[in-house]
Length: 153
Ligand SMILES: [Zn+2]
Image (cartoon, rainbow, N blue to C red; front, side, top):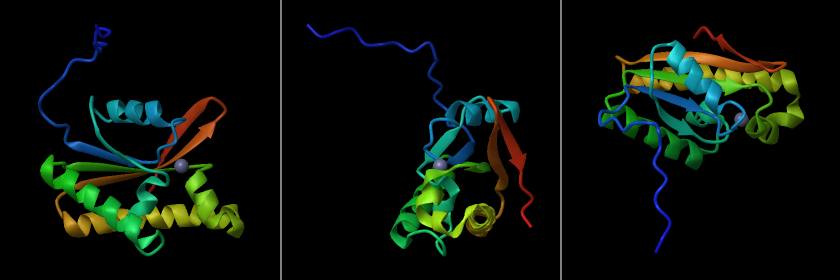
């Protein structure tokens, strides 16, 4: 006889959230991103998490195949789940950026992250002109996690 299932205290809701958050897999920020979403009025979110997060949506700076796959996944969710709002989040100390651009120094990395956020937003809006996109740079300050809104231009 197998063990009984674990039953979550979180209730199932059949309708899809209409917000998609694209962010890094880095688990140091997962709960805080959901906290931000609640602050913005969204109890639940669709998520697309991969190392580097929205950096993967910039096909000019990311690996082409990775970027293509992540872009398709984002489009699938936005179209299929009727997403109307997207949160794009980059974070300080990101291992993906460190591995990819770290040798070019922290200033270059920070600039690249902002470029990727803006490029990702602009690409999504080209494909889905009616969606709202919010950009954030996420930065720990001691034990606090700050979400700095990033203007698109
Ligand atoms: Zn990261």
